[in-house]
Image 1: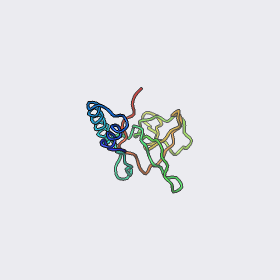
Image 2 (image 1 turned 45 degrees about the vertical axis):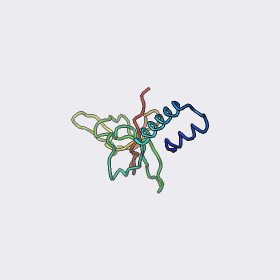
Image 3 (image 1 turned 180 degrees about the horizontal axis):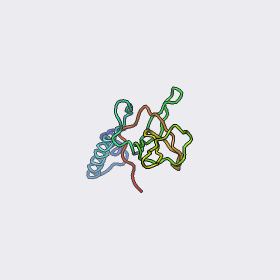
Image 4 (image 1 turned 90 degrees about the vertical axis):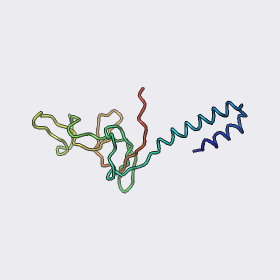
Length: 135
């Protein structure tokens, strides 16, 4: 990434702006750099630190056959998501009091329709991603 000084120099050499335009360009470049500096993502081992809000989607690294793969994952808290159909009769959390079956607490990925959830064991998560904009 270019520094604000380098961006300003490129602008002056290519566009030949007036003095006022140079000042505006300098200010804009400075603001853009300050904003970009706020978002310096880093991969954090799950074993070291848990995400502040794990229920939001997170970029995770999952190990499979000795390689790390990126996944978009999310965390399901204990007894927060009902489970209506399941393949593995040992992988559920049954609440006898309410007679409700829940997903076991843990990390999951889902298909694009959020109809199927797959439990995973991520090794890392990406910290420093800004919130997703709402449409």
